[in-house]
Amino acid sequence: MAAIVTTNILATLVAMGLDTLRDRLALVLVANREYERMITGATRGGTVNVAVPASVAARTVSPDVVPPAVTTVTPTSVPITLDQWKEAPFAMDDKGLIQVQNGILPMQAAEAVKSVANTIEDYLWSLLQAKISNYAGTAGTTPFGSGLDDFLAADKQLNDNLADPEDRFMILNTAAKASAMGLRAIQDASFRGNKSDSLINGEIGDVLGARWLMSQRVPNHVSGTLAGVGTTVTGVNAIGATVIALSGGASGTILAGDIIDFGVTNAITGVLETYNVVSSVGGATPSSVTIASPGLKTATAGAEVVSIKASFKQNILLQRHCLAFAMAPLVDTVQVPGATLQQVAIDEVSGLSLRLEVSRQHRQVQWSFDALYGGAVIRPQLGCWLAG
Image (cartoon, rainbow, N blue to C red; front, side):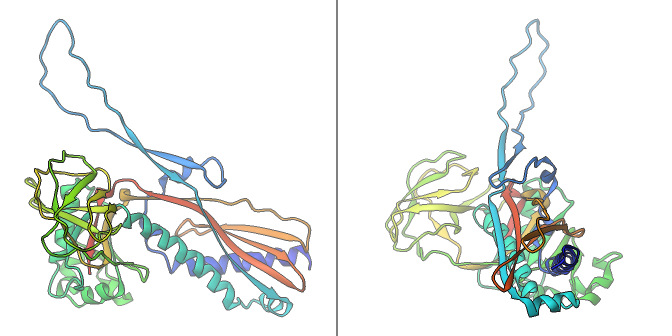
């Protein structure tokens, strides 16, 4: 197998594979990727720390001989670790190799690329599932059955949390998209500005300050079985507390990723305060629950009734700075012809870096697409579930 022929085969497969990736990604297209420029190496486990500034309180100026003390602030950081190295390998005999040389892309190569794409998408969803606490809509009911109220409720929560009005994205599953496209408000050109032709192409596009996208990978969260009003908060818990003791003994589980509330409506926003469950203690009779940072927004006095949302489809409205994603270009090499060859291509649309490695085995050639990446939820308050 001549080196030049093999290189051409690699270029053909990488380029055609990336076309498949472009059509199957949603979250990777909307996540903040500006931190990739900080990556100095492509080794697994490499970390980029994203600084999160601390709040600074304003105070009255009082002229004096001695200047007042300056309050110390402690910025925090969120690490993005390149700890996800995934590959999708497959083997091809010489007959299949000849087909590639004739310009026919094997279906197996397309499936391998699809597998990597779906893995990246599912990984990003898993990050959101562990962090996002804001909640709108009704569990078990597809949104947009009669109007845009559910979207407006989610949009209000982002506004309450000071989300930038730019770069907002509404990601829907297939059922929610179908329901939304049936609304006159979505169809009416007066809502759509100069992009009214997007429906012609089957896309919703920009509506009410957000870009609406559809993904077949929107997950379904299966909630715990806690029901009734038998479980309550135990004692006083300060703002910021993340471990909340429970009592009352109502039967039923509380699971990681559940959306929990303590019956408290925020005094400023007027919205029921919801939290993402990290873990619980006590099994079928929970005695405590740990919620995701930054913890309680309002202190508890004790005896507040504990509830969890039922299982729901996790459509989401988010602002780009909610989720960060970084992908490291992998090293490409060309070794001895007939041994191992590698080639890397970067998709100009999504920025994905995908490596294809080819190695000769006994009477067959192994092909493997791989990618090295990581992500983190930087500001969970900039995302809101829209339940379905």
